[in-house]
Image 1 (cartoon, rainbow, N blue to C red):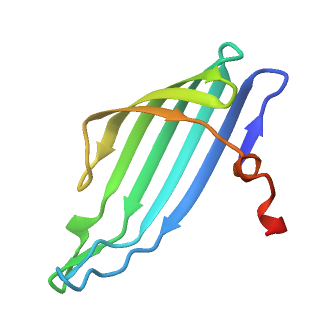
Image 2 (cartoon, one colour; image 1 turned 90 degrees about the vertical axis):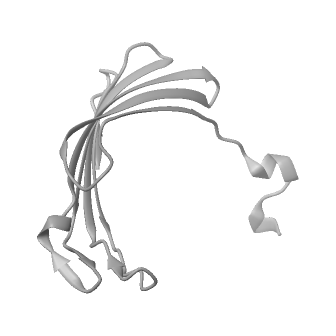
Length: 134
């Protein structure tokens, strides 16, 4: 769910997900199901430059190892992620982000840096017809 603050070039968005996990019978491990909540606030500094900050929360349920269920396997984690996106040309965007762990256990922690490049294309223009025409 999100909200644009137009004419101010800003937005806010919140996502919630529930991840169903099943037991891995080969190693006798069930890591527990997970709830994820992401909140994001973004602002277009210029028409091509977007700055955003995301707060990511994940909580995993009780896990089972070798048939033993323990509350010590619960995975709570909170990340803060500042993001910069730059529109290079058309729909091609370069993105850089840093993920900082604010709190958590039983999950990767520390600082993570991500770099990305994304674009979109119209497959129909490549083949000259739509998939519905096939």
